[in-house]
Length: 175
Image (cartoon, rainbow, N blue to C red; front, side, top):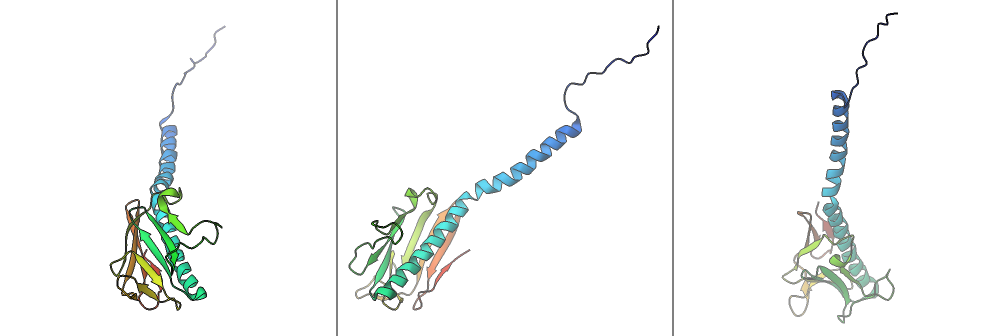
């Protein structure tokens, strides 16, 4: 009896198509992950800029509602700022009861990559609001209306600014 059998071919390895599919999947995954990792600093910066703008608005509203001056004091060396009343005392935080209203970026893990590059309100790093919400500068005595005010923040090589307009106290955030 004669059997006509072909020898069995044993394949070890992958075909070219299988390798190309795997490489394509890895490339797509990398294209999704890399931008997300690089934008972490930008996300922290966006959160910090919005928080600074909201805290400036809070200080302004406290001045109006209480009928007394409140100021926001920025310190770029400690990457922090605080809200103080007209006597120079730090006010209490409205959410963290019993805590002073001090924000330090380096101690907050959500904002640790953000730095305060500068805070300039007519040459000083403090902006105040009077009982009408009008911004003033403490660069002179007595305090005078604010001419210009800008806070510059940076994270991940990206810079954003928060501006306080003279007379109106309107607060804007740069893109």
